[in-house]
Image (cartoon, rainbow, N blue to C red; front, side, top):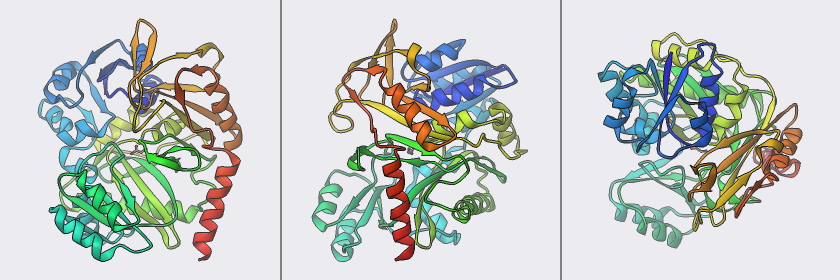
Length: 426
Ligand code: GLY
């Protein structure tokens, strides 16, 4: 069986590893922007290509039995539609279904019209001067959230606490925005295989968006993430997880009732508030880094899940119940002023899983780009031990780089539990 993977990040390296473990013993091909050395090593052949160049990717996919698409951009552009048209099986949502991520204005209107629980109060503005006026009239001590409606690589969502902050941010934007109430609580992610009707959810993950320790600094694509040894995280309970999955299921059902069959991965980003989970956003693909937490725990066969999602015959997915801690290594200055740098990785001494992300590999010399470079993943019976394993691995990655050492540490986890307790008791 020939499988073509589209994408070149850490998420796609985790997907490539899961595909390579399949009992189908697939021959793997990749269409990627950069030569990810981890993916390249698992591949029979690869094509370096802009992943949104749909014609080129589809030409390369001609002989594939299945195409698995990692990033949102080619999904939003309609890669699955192009492949369908050419009779190539593809695992991922169509352009219309991917709008759940690529058009945040539509996603909110849809949730609201369909009465899906967990939709915050929001307003949609095509004209930024109307948005400016709205902020002036409505900003208070709770703050507001501004979201460009299109794709922003996870970095476009900004919380503002004053009119002048809002005004300054709007000046940097073009095109429509959604402005929402600012939710208080703890964020978590649930990722699920979906076949248009059935949802097979994975354990909850918590990502860390801020660049620096203590949740300080600018937003990033995600500096690292953890899972616990069950489906829930230390600050949540089973009902919170069930409520989140129900919201995702209701969304899939509502899409279906409108003739939109969502097949692929649905990523629900939730804020656990005093009244339960609220939807921060939906994405139409695995999270990065969150895929690196859950795919190594996947006991079910990835290809079987992907094919049954495409065929509409999905059953539940099984995961090993172990804790994981993932930490990204990024170039100095990331994300505002990153400087590409050469890094050395002493793989002989790393006993954690290692995922390559945005790097260039020239004859074994690894240089970062301006984005997240490599990630390490500890897997153990407890978050604490998984964190130790990830930290040990970080010592063997050298260069002008940094990572968030606080992710998964007892102090940070306890502060999350305390924070959630204060929110619930308020
Ligand atoms: N880690 C955030 C995302 O993948 O959107």
